[in-house]
Length: 136
Image (cartoon, rainbow, N blue to C red; front, side, top):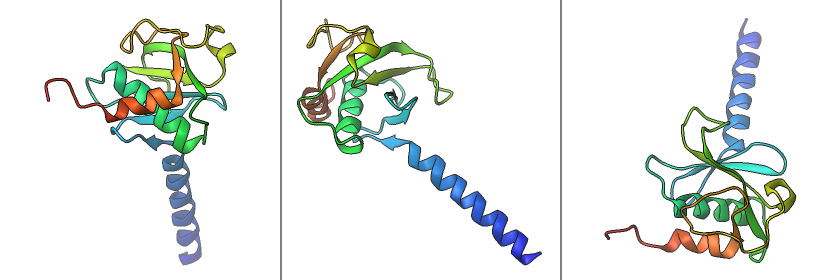
């Protein structure tokens, strides 16, 4: 009985570690979860602004994926319900332009637009993490 209990406990802990390892916490507290090998989803804290999405995407691309600073992040799916959590607001990003409709590099109207095809360099997205909140 003790061996069975130890085995079940061990498998449960391995499951918890595996689940926690797939999520990434960005510097601003947003969560980043892989959707596929090429797409990841940013789920900000409540009331996230455009810069929160881009900051988390840049942070994940640089620290977790080890992407070069000059690589481009693309929005593959605009703001909508999360596929990886039960949250209502998430944006999906990729480093592959073909998954974002092959937009021209450097194309975006505004940081807050979060439209499919919007893109910016990893460095520029990461630098949005260093901006003070509005009204500070």
